[in-house]
Length: 266
Image: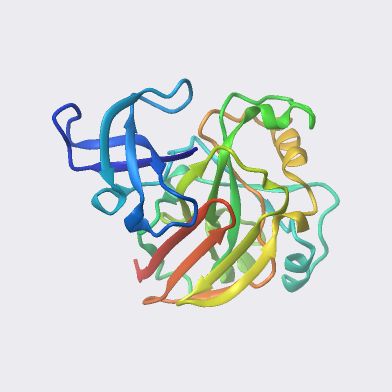
């Protein structure tokens, strides 16, 4: 099931505004062939439809959730660790991105004037469905709601200068997420392709992760409680590089769809 959050034009039974819904139509079909069916309330429970449906092009997709936190993995692909000039860590390297960095598909990535080198990082995002604290690897997937595409946008010059990640990865708009959450998916070996202006820049597979998703959830939940709607960014394959104003960057993941964002000056 594909769960989306969107702004809809309203109907007899739903006031115009924001709703969650399911995206209906064949996997891989063009947007014009898809519809979205509104559901009652939030999706963390039994799904009940309101009866309202719209063609997907007639609504505006938002980020699927507004997480309390985004926890990201650094250097979780060996080839990416090498291109960054270091070795992959023995234990998961985690950092936080603020909730204010999250945007949806189609929203602008805004380049801060204080950085001269902003990079894309296409990643698989894991969305948490139930509270997770000190969970084991074996129980990790019991707490997963689903999966989305993400872009861990990074001011690379500031990352180098600061020696840590907070400023470089924390700007507003630096965590595109979407286009929706796929709840039924095996994430163990999915192709991740990042393009800039239609040209392939990253092409990797989730099977290349050093620390798999179960390990990540177990490790993170031993540090902090993960709440429903929280997001884990699982690391990026090799091929990261710069984006500039006027670019369009897209992260497409097998079995999910494509997350596409234009790039503008802040």
